[in-house]
Length: 194
Length: 244
Image (cartoon, rainbow over all chains, first blue to last red; front, side, top):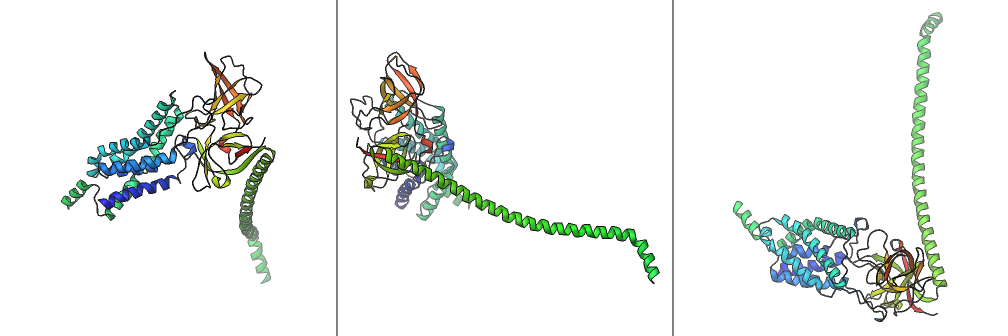
């Protein structure tokens, strides 16, 4: 169990490295594969709440470290209405929220129905992006929602979800290597059948 | 015997004629086939040569383009009165919501945060972050909502704050010039320059041209088309200091 939990942390850190090699698709409304969020979501459904929260903290912390913008820094007498930045650490809360969502369907995953988790990972990414964009609109005021933004969020969620079976396959392999079962009920059922 | 032979041949003459014609035709056909095979082989070789020449030509065009760009950049570097460092864009839009690019120059080349970044067409943005390794920096583009520039309109007393627009990733990005006077008399095509006030950007850097004006009760706003083609940007210059 501990070995598996440590492996998920390492996998999440590896996802940050992989994210650096995934550019945005200009032809698809600048959508991208959010491999960090995907790995977190897939791991979240396979671990307990405490490990999920630890993963959410690490994922959100490093994600903010990657994406945070510095303040403008110009003369406040000239730039009287600076554009607000997102506070460092907000991603930890978002990661925690989508992680809790994945934990909600953990019983289904334990029965071996990982397909629902794969589908939910896409929905969770969409919710994550929508929440992030809503926060940006909230802190900056003057809400704007263009068709291009909606398409960007939808395509990002969709193409990210397509990679979830691969991540689940990887997690099953890691779990087997660590002699740990991430869907114990399905395992017991298989044993009874034999 | 000869007579018999003659009779035989006279009887066979039409067939012989047809046969010889057929043979000639067959020979011609075979010759043609052989020839067409040769031609085909020749055509194949020619095609290969053409493909290779096309490759060479495209490489030549790419080099010509790169040469023109570098020449342009060199001219810009010579002509500008700023102390600048040239850099290449190595990564575009690494984050989801912010419009940023990464360049291959950092603190090792005296680049720090909040320095203006130019191209030969105008203002590109400002340095947002310098990597600890000192070899890379992140540039916040002018098209991002957070990048604000104090701006003036050429041939007019109007000054305002220019910034990008939220969610303006697709198509032709437009900038918004805010806090203009309610009766701002602006016309399409007027150029917009930086004022130099505010401490980040030097004065008289071209930002764009007025596209349209939206008049309000308290103030007016103008949509500005950026002078820089952000989609085609490959080399930029970081302004270290202004020696003017």
